[in-house]
Amino acid sequence: MIRYIIYRIAGLIGVLFLVTIITFSLMHAVPGGPFDEEKMPLSAEAKANILRKYGLDRPLYEQYGRYMWNALQFDFGIPFQSPGETVTDLIARTWPISMQLGGMGLAVAFSFGILLGVLSAIRQNTWMDYGTTMLATLGITVPSFAISILFIVIFATIWRILPTGGWGGPETWIMPVIVYALGPMAIIARYTRSSVLENLRMDYVRTARAKGLKERSVLFIHVLKNSLIPLLTIMGPMLPGVMTGSLFVEGIFRIPGLGQFFVTSIFERDYPMIMALTLLVAVLIGIVYLITDILYALVDPRVSYVRGSK
Image 1 (cartoon, rainbow, N blue to C red):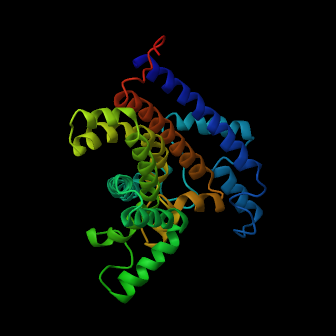
Image 2 (image 1 turned 180 degrees about the vertical axis):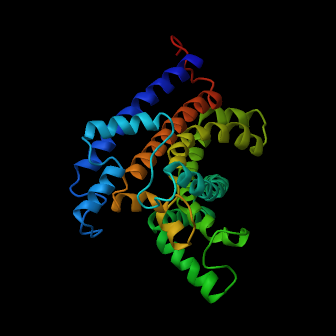
Image 3 (image 1 turned 60 degrees about the vertical axis):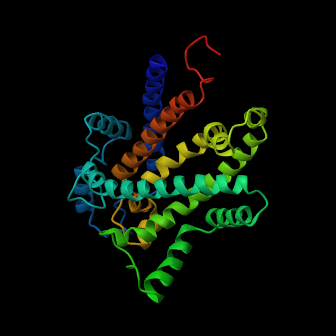
């Protein structure tokens, strides 16, 4: 297992190197730049000074080499959108808020998603099953910004029991956390239902029931444990997206998180932020997939990453 983890980490380093080359090449291949005259009317001398300040007047290979050298020292430059602070300071200031929002959203999504999926499976073709299916369909198909606006109209404008936005006390967390959790919760509920139904039809379940085990023991000790393996596959890729913030949710509820910079950095051609956020997501995806593979071995004893084992 230790050797497998070392190999995966070495592979992740190689992937990050390729990601930096592709991202750097693509963002410079697009016509225009962050200080074009149509965005920011400047004299030729002023523009030249700005380009010289940020090193944008140098050849691309030199810019890339300089960026990588600084990045290895955890210096990711100065964001063009907020020149008063470094990229590292901006991420350190905003990412904890997005992580708090995403963490609470994931906790709600996992808890209620698994619960609704299990109830829907053991109450198949009942009102519980149909209601869960309808809720999951709405959570997957209806965009988060539409649900956010609906919640604000109902709970903040009509009933006036919750604030319209902000990020302070627990009362400001309720609506964004619920909206954030609906999509992942719907997906988890659907996969849990399918996985539990599949395992309920297995031979080992009939054997356990024939031995006289209670239905609760069969469900929680045998069925649910084996149903978690497919769920790990979908839960892992959710984490990087949820933990780095949502443009719509954070924007509508005025949450000062990291999500708003994912799109604005592209429109503003903020090269340092684009590179830093791309690397952040790539690192999170690599780590999450590694943890998911390790959890496979912990949940299912048949899975092994020792060379020569089956």
